[in-house]
Image (cartoon, protein in one colour):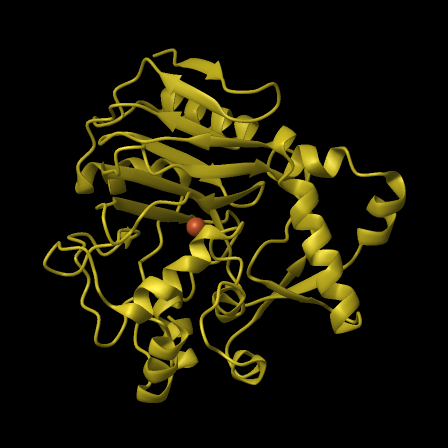
Length: 317
Ligand SMILES: [Fe+2]
């Protein structure tokens, strides 16, 4: 079955139609979809007709689908263990009034690459809309391959061989969650190259809100470089927004894009988005439940804050 690809900009983003992805797909169609995803970085699918099980099943065409983390004291609303709950709803399906979770979620509105804080990185993320605010509750995306292509040669030379540390807890601090620098120090970090080669063969910048320090560089200088790179990648010419209606889905490749959740009033409007995450290719079959392991090693998290952190959250608001 030939799919229809409608580009959303010259180098980045495409809407795909002409195929029913709620049903099993033949190998040729799967391959066409994977190639379109590698080329465009972000693909948008309207009126998919996917339910939770079909969402997970379709995700498997891209590789190993991760298990979502389980947090002590926060039972999941999701019927499938692979679904990450990206909503503002509690277990009963009501808008959450949990201050720690709401403040923690603010970090998702900073430009980031999902899971860059893990040793084993995420490639594709498939975000399906079940319920959206009236304005469509957009996600913004940035093209980190074109941003790399356009860097001055001098900057490309400077970035060659650099590595950076990434931590989930650092991006929460950046967004206003009341962790101290020392508390973030004590929590898990991962290290990744600042520039890497994507599956498409093109190079991409790999720096976002989780990125904390450049290895071997003075902390202040490193953070300025990180902020400069994020600002470079997220110039208007590299970005686009996707607005949702129920049934719509966006797939983005975390290894060649940045994204952020758009603003909306999360106390007023329900936003029920569910995401699967596909592990980067070439990673071994280890650490099946590595998200739960990482969060459990971190101890005090926005999902399961200590009493002391919970108090500080309330003072922060
Ligand atoms: Fe995200």
